[in-house]
Figure 1: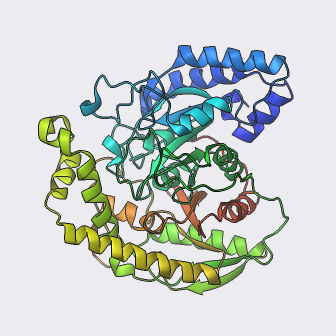
Figure 2 (figure 1 turned 180 degrees about the vertical axis):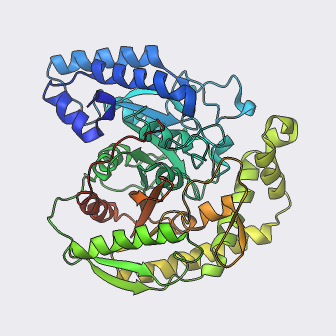
Length: 463
């Protein structure tokens, strides 16, 4: 096995035991980027020289017995919305040409302090306003969408071009590409991870979280990222927690909610089969399955768009009026549409969110975790605009991909996407686990327990 193929946990263990040097690991990942990125285009920019310098420093520290934790010397990619001092933050847009960050974002500073090594900035759908990341090819089939808006981060991890990466999630933008590329994506509770220094799409829905190869890896990264930062008004002052999942041999006593409605409506048959098989595996591990009804389903998408569209337009108000021609057409249309939404529509969406949060809190008193598909179908062909369901109805691809993930953004609950197999075309399928606010440890425990029943995942052949 090459170093770039290692999980974060395995790499950390070898670095600590002095069986792998940070320089060796970073060099391996950089060589892998050279090999695969011309084909999948996960990266906006690769910071090879700086990465090698940071790796040498991490190696020298290790030689002196200084070990900053499990991220020490481990290479990471950051979505190109996340500020790193002195580096461009382009948001994959011509609007940001020439922009350089004056200081580290909260999360970049925490990764730096933990000894992680930045190898590059990963592509996003322009300003995170989309669900495909059109610049980037899927790690399993370059002719299919990567998913968005954290598509570059998910593809980099899936292809071995980063040991882990960070993304942002406003309506599913970590979990959607993670599911479509066969990796783990985690959206924490709203306010748990600070967003200072991260370009916003919709401030009341935005989250920052990890994309990794395993659930254990996601827990290791989350433990570093979580914690209060007063520079983010939404950041919550919660006590520091080690989010690494407990290693109980089973899930005895865990109540897993299985939706009777919404999450399995208009879902590809192969996706449903794989996810229900994953849920059955949780029951085999000792979990108690409880059927539940998802509330207010007719309002979910209207609430998501009712919050996101005006907030995004407000954020871009200045540049939308001065340099509209620099935006991609799909993003510009959405931003212009936001100018047509009235204050009443926005306030009704906020009221709907409050009611939805209350209803979900009631459900999560009855169950510990909800299990459902992460996305309704696997990665579509690049350029495909609509999907046709078995009943003859059609749906926009972007609407389909956001439909099952947006409830967690509206309510702010944590959500984890884990791989549960492949369809007959060989494309990955993801299961989504949702939990109570600040119930990350329980959620990660369930995902980790499921993951341990599966064989080790290999890198995609297309990579």
